[in-house]
Image (cartoon, rainbow, N blue to C red; front, side):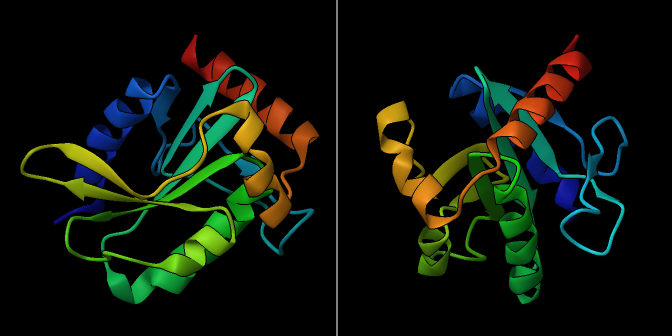
Length: 155
């Protein structure tokens, strides 16, 4: 199974939650400069979206062996986005409480039914977001800049 078969159900799920979302994957439509934070010039997220001024990034992985690598990317994305999810195919990762400790959600994608289940929920109400921001602060100026970049890509 290729990882990109998970993208479209996730994009649909994000849009159902009010985000305008794009599948970026290996495309260079959204390139996020990260050289101020890590020794790499840029990174491309798998899916990205915007709702109001809040950004969502979903890191998709298909192999449980790559969990910590994917988790590290999620921590990087938390610097840029309020909502960060790690997504796996159904049955690969059923629980990972450590994600909750860092304000990262967990999604399970059922390829057969094309549905997404949120195994670790992130707060949706603005008043509840303090829990996520306390765990791993988002750099709001970067999030605003990224939100604008996403909006321009969606035009």
